[in-house]
Length: 106
Image (cartoon, rainbow, N blue to C red; front, side):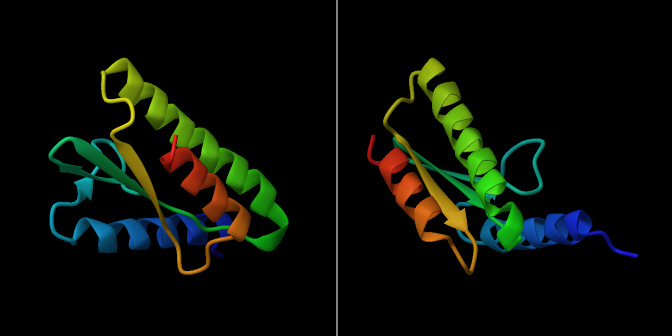
């Protein structure tokens, strides 16, 4: 019996694996679901998003928390303002799309 969480985890890994195959992209060290690409002075981080409808608000909060953590880590390393996030998902909730755009434009 496959739990929903295991299925979601495999889906997250699948999206990230596809991204990691693109030119310049690689997995973030220690992660099998998050990818990074360093392009001159800009850092791009791609993180997959998967959620069931009923858990979507919680998953969105966790996702935004992860982006905030990466932004703070970048700031502490003097990379503030040079980091952009990409959502890996075939169906991105509008509210998440808007939040990530806002975070990218800080």
